[in-house]
Amino acid sequence: MESGVEALMPPGYAPEQVGSLRPMSGWNFAQVWESIAREVPDRPALICGDRGVTWGELADRSARLASHLHAAGVRPGDRVALDLTNVPEYLETVFAALRIGAAPLNVNYRYLADEVRYVLANSGAAALVHAPEYAAVVGEAIAGLPADARPVTLETGAPYEAALAAAAPMGPWQARTPDPHDLILLYTGGTTGMPKGVMWRNDDLYVALWQSNRPGTLPKDPVAAVRAGKRAGTALPACPLMHGTGLFIALSTLAGGGTVVLIEETGLDAVRVWSEVERNQVSVLTIVGDVFARPLLAALDAEPDRFDLSSLRAITSSGVTFSPDAKTGLMGHLPGVTIIDALGSSEGIMTRSEAKGADDVKPARFAVNERVAVLDEDTGEPVEPGSGQVGLMGVTGPIPMGYWGDDEKSRATFREFGGKRWSIPGDYATVEPDGSITLLGRGNACINTGGEKVYPEEVEVVLRDHPAVDDCVVVGVPDDRFGEMVVGVVAPPPGITLDEAELDAFARGRLAGYKRPRRYVVVDDLARSAAGKANLRYLRDLAAEHVGRTS
Image 1 (cartoon, rainbow, N blue to C red):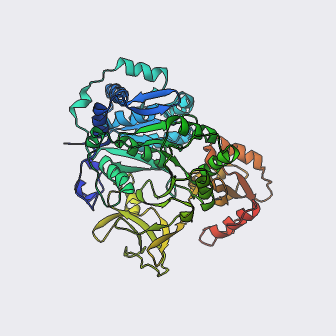
Image 2: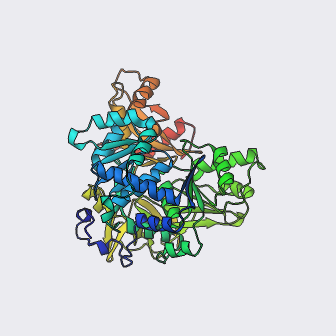
Image 3: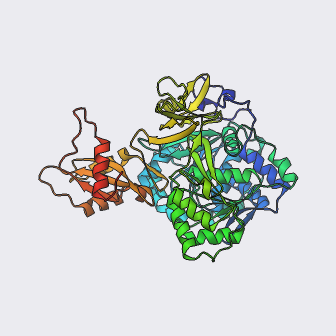
């Protein structure tokens, strides 16, 4: 059946070649969820504070939303943007878009108008569902788009509920069966430039999520499992659904007929997280490294007997360093809980490392396997274990199709070696004699702060617009809580005194909070090379010394 997205395939790739390690299996999240809802309509699907959405209600509400969006002109192959926090409407909208055959895509709710406008323009979004608190930003963003490129909008709360009440749970969109080629777009910070939309086919993402937990196997029929009384556990993504880590755990939990617990408020309230784990008998808690782990551990240290956390079976983390001491501290309060470090990115789900007791706690080590390898940057050949050779991390099998509308960056990241397509996001590594991988980090300037990727070039462009900034370079400095701190190294024009508070206020109106430098280092000259290149190692060391850290 025509899916409306075949034209987006990378040149030279037929649909059955996208996942080169397996035959097409044909999974679509919407079709799976609809089938599960018929089997267990009264089972809780989503819980958010005092709000509960059963599987039957999830199916009905997403169907009504699909009818509303279809009536507004959304069609298969279109894009539906979400500017929401962790609320049931987020997953209802994902479900509705996929039922139509449209691609849901994330908008970072921290974005300001220019940033939102960029994502809407880049994706060509036909519709946008947003929270009331982002209405002003959304309105300003859309006003700056050409009239024929403005998406229809739906605000959650009263307008959203009115739209569902007025829409039918049946509609023309049901004439089309959800297709495994249908897309889910995940806009990611990447490494340079503006955010890029990673194109995941439903089938590839479904299989990749399954294989992240069950390497070397293909998904089994989830409906048969639900019919037999089995279900995924209850998961709480403490990180935002607008990032891959949060969305992926929610998708996989629902694909197993489980329950997803959501916390609507932004930011991390550690006491609230543990209270929700206790109240909803959460079995899997998903976080983002130490930026979450340390506050959660501090709450347990302060009140070790306050919470009944006996339901918890695993804590999963991805995206930021998860240190051994944080793991050890959590295990001291949570005996029997498995702590899982996941290795991967929006461009590919790779592998994971598990710690089940104090003896297992160490810096996360990952092993090469049939899907994950460290490849020679020039030849694409696997790096020899123990050779000390530095290579690039790569994952094959079910991987994304590429970046939305960016063939050049797609070719740079998604490459073919040895008859297989590989996703190579840019992480450098070596392979130890025992086959384990030692990560060396990105070979570029990308900054990872609290799970958010900050691309220095974007911040530098903004800072250079200030009249008291002649040149600048933005770097990351190690930070105990956030992994890295954004620091701006700036050089004012000769004879000009830079007011750091004024510069910060200037950036505040133009950049999301996590992108703004937390500290500034003022220098006379950045000492660029004759070719205009900055010495990033020198500038990072300089910034680290200035803020009292060593790299």
